[in-house]
Amino acid sequence: MCDTCGCGDPEIVPVEIHDKILAGNDRTAAHNREHFRESAVVAVNLMGSPGSGKTAVLEATARRLAGGQRLPPQRGCRVGGPGLGALAGDLATEHDADRLRAAGITAKSITTGSACHLDAEMVHRGLHDFPWRELDYLFIENVGNLVCPAVYYLGQAVNVVALSVTEGEDKPLKYPVMFRKADLVLLTKTDLLPHLPDVRIETIADALARVMPRPAYFPLSARTGEGMERWLEWLEHLRVLQGSIEASALQT
Amino acid sequence: MHEYSIVQALVERVDAEVRARQAIAVHRLSVRIGELSGVEVELLTTAYATFRERTVCEGAELDVRVVPARWECPDCGGAIGRGDLLRCRLCDVPARLAEGDEIMLDRIEMEVP
Image 1: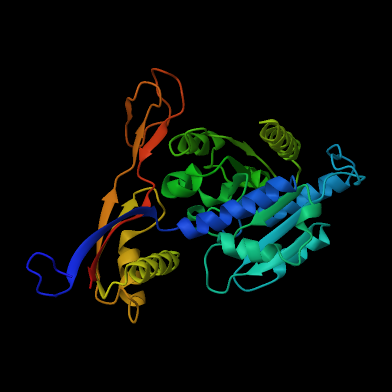
Image 2 (image 1 turned 135 degrees about the horizontal axis):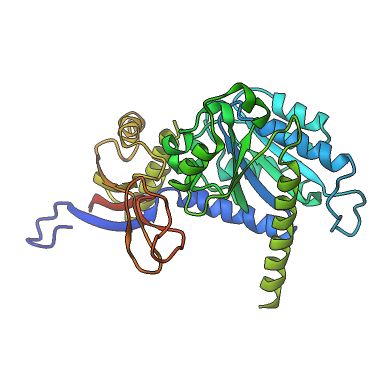
């Protein structure tokens, strides 16, 4: 009530909030993150344009690991390398999940309808009826899009962005939000470089250093295998790192 | 077009505040959007104009304050110029984003009984 004059009229009050609009999403993401940490699952949010080679990178990863170049098994009961799983965000189809399953990855589609990104709740629902606790790595293959997915934290340990050399050298400068969030950029489809005389890796690297404070990238070809060793080492390092973080968290 | 989903989260948050304070009406929302937040202000205002219909925000103006991206050195505090390499030349350390990634609801002006 207006208490200046006691007239009984309603009063307009400013209420200070100063909170993130997506605080609800962040809470669900923190919940997902807690699940992943408890079960020692390394969650990787894989983003990139449509056709940047996200699915191909995962297929090649599975092929490598099935082909004898395995990471040392860390889970007590598993023999023969780490367990790979994927939640594939897709607007309308099951194509990516089908491809991933054919490559030997435990995969499930999250069909987003018209949504241009995954959010933490979609990932949380995606974990239901999915044997994610048995995995060492859960790849969250986001919807192909260089804008929207960067806005939503899902509970992942890291963000990886696939940028194919055919997309143009200036993409990092055009989409700084996405690349700022990246922990690693995979410069994919490098087998096509001989056909792209105007594209130079150095130029892409320079662009990345203007949008990523800690630029981390390397060339990779899912077709020829270039860069795959380095990618697997990076993933293994991540698992060891997450393991040591969990261990130190337990000690304190 | 994730701006629709941002507006949805915004309206839900306002709705919760309105219920908590038993407000009669909402007059104005003040939000802060960073240049590097990934939110396009024009799309956000369009989404808001569409989505607020038949919600608690139907009569509420949306004030948007845009925050330019500002990078600085975490050690010496020196500013990193727009478009420069994101590394302090003096201290040789990665730059830090001081501001410019906000997607914040700052204030709700509401009518209370």
